[in-house]
Image (cartoon, rainbow, N blue to C red):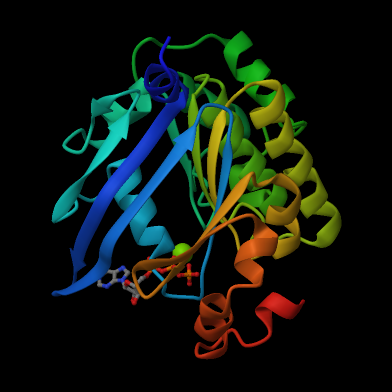
Length: 252
Ligand SMILES: Nc1ncnc2c1ncn2[C@@H]1O[C@H](COP(=O)(O)OP(=O)(O)OP(=O)(O)O)[C@@H](O)[C@H]1O
Ligand SMILES: [Mg+2]
């Protein structure tokens, strides 16, 4: 295998020069990223930088104005969300919205039957065990605390054995001891199971331990990339945070 072929085999996912318009203005101004199999790419940036909007494009919920999304060497830019899910792309949301009317057991069943092939109870148990979700099936999902909501939704994704997880602030709303669980879990998924993870997260201390590389967004652009130490030392990153509302976020 030539170095070029090897690099192509290692690459699972990429986007190239993504431009996105929302509400009549351009929100993303040419974002590109690449991620290899089993790698964890962290994305940080001040509020409103465009991180969630980028995830909308990467997951297929919103079409970009221009640019490409590439998965396993294939251009998937025009594939809708459900088609990307079938290919092994899972996405978690900043706010863990669980089905209002369903119990935990009904939620697992709905996830098993979300699309063909329908999965078995064993698949659902596999997902629940991976994330250490231990809530009884008859509990209404609305009764769950944030951590268990996040775990339930993640278990529903993991039962499909995704190759890529796009995680939007998985530690939002959690206390420190719960963040440790998320930290452990993401490590397990990436290092033991070779799942590729792109994670948006404000908690620097979480990304510091799990991310192989970090990219920093501000105002719809990538302003810095590298190790966490490198980006934290980048004057452009400091300027972006201090010129925005989240003053001091990097010093926590
Ligand atoms: N549906 C929409 N219509 C118009 N503008 C939008 C829409 N969604 C997001 N925006 C704008 O796009 C910009 C980027 O928002 P986005 O939610 O992607 O930022 P973010 O980096 O995820 O921020 P946060 O850290 O607060 O989650 C913001 O200015 C936001 O107001
Ligand atoms: Mg966001």
